Length: 320
Image 1 (cartoon, helix red, strand yellow):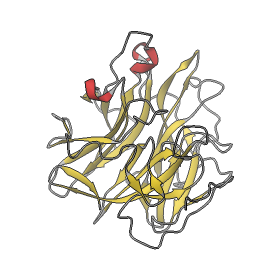
Image 2 (cartoon, rainbow, N blue to C red):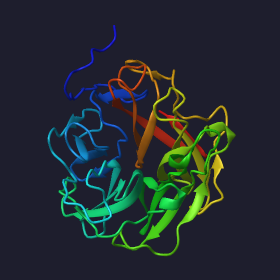
Image 3 (cartoon, rainbow, N blue to C red):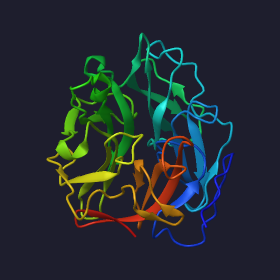
């Protein structure tokens, strides 16, 4: 029997290990980022449920609850952000002094079809976050920038993001959608050199790749997850690439190891549809959150959240 869809946010309790993906939030919570702190796990998501940046919390990774009505990024926003900010895919990282930085994408002022990547800071993981005056990445002429995610590589900090070239696409044209790596200083905000390209789409990815997230295995291998194809179709997926050096070269995983998640894959409540927007954390056993179609078919009821344990080993990622 299928799990009933709830009209409001719900926390779903799971008693077993997450050997296959389990639905943990049955509400519209797209692009869930993931951070582990001293008191548990937090996730931040694209605008929805009446707030700019949604928040969810779990003390054990298996039982999650939406922090209903709490906005991690309530504003006001700086001059580069449009009146309606349309916050996408916020991601939070802890800094060395115990404070936090949020990376987010917001609609650019004067060009509502483009987003830029911004930064915001707070003393508490849940905010409220105060946005900084200047964007971190704003290549409007290339389509803008979206989907930022922070990564701490043994004290050296980076932000990975997507150049949103598909926002320029017209019938019969397809633009590059490279995933970029921006080194930042210890404040998590100030650029430390130029951004470099890690990956771009190829013929297997459809019109784009996006939603990057970085992790590192025990053997020193770097893992970069990303989504391919269009977010509102069942072709959307979670794929990944590996590298021995964070700056590359990066090699996309190939069959039978890719995509990591795709429509039709098994979950505890049925088959996944349109999985994407994944985020990692590392540890003795890695963790992954991702969204998929809430109703199992399309975008009509938004995108709910699934969680799973993962293993990063030998250049492969597997749900464990």
